[in-house]
Image (cartoon, rainbow, N blue to C red; front, side):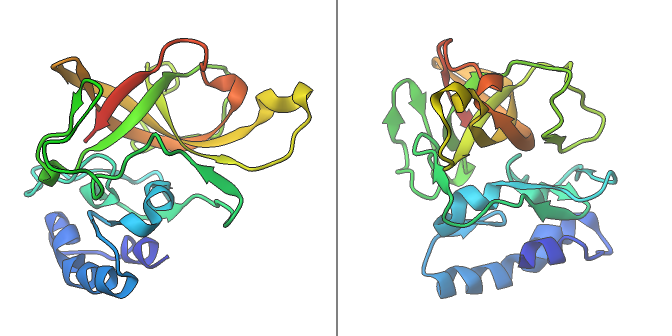
Length: 214
């Protein structure tokens, strides 16, 4: 994709990364007849979230103004690539709500989305069954490890016919998130990575949490 090529470019100042592409992004939004921002298009929202660092040299850009949401690759320095997600073979999760679709000040459950300019994603977070064999996860910052507690947000699930005895092998594409704070009964989270998990690695039995991802 264009953005993965763009992320390989070097800039004199790291904070110029989102500024330099803003004009191109606006033209693409008009061409696709959609909404968007922060390196993501509403028309391809779920797929656009499934980026990952391409190399170990990757990290958050410090002192960035305006600050990019954690789910945007524009807030990081280093090259990205997109997960190999097959077209037409994924059922996208309708519990994941794009910030470009939210109405300013709207409420769902106990979560108040607030100002749309905050670019929050409304989602459902679940616990993750940590297993030593899990190797389908990529943390945005290489220093993070599987021992650090996090939640998973299912972005989409692969449509693959499986016999009932193998249903727990169903594959999902997920965001990895950690809590930052809570307000009025709703937890605010930030993205820390992305990956693929089988159904047996996600806790669907325990209560899930409605969260905002910034």
